[in-house]
Figure 1 (cartoon, rainbow, N blue to C red):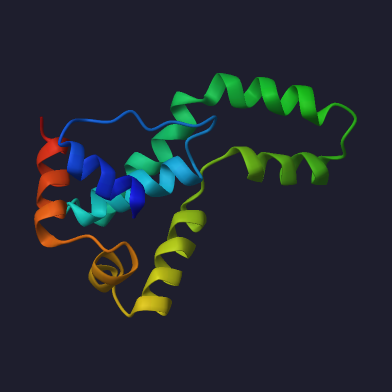
Figure 2 (figure 1 turned 90 degrees about the horizontal axis):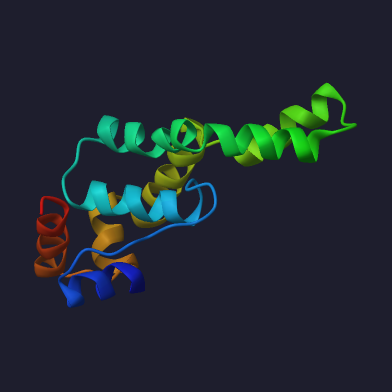
Length: 126
């Protein structure tokens, strides 16, 4: 909520990044998109795009860290590196469980006002 309120207050696009783009950054961007009215299928596609963008670095990291691992251990390692639909689905399911709806999460959990959500949505189309 703090990050989104800050971006809305500044009123200018912001750079949000991390190593693989699937955890804090991926979820923050997914929340921003969904709060802005983007269709859930498009939110998921955007979230999963990090796998293509980071494919080379994920392969290199898996090769480096996975040396000497069993197939099962490499599969677990891969689960840490990849964005998977189940991860984002689990996040949104927990939001629904804790708040009853995504809209209520935006209002009460993130403490975003309607005008802040509108400003964020407008920044996406700049």
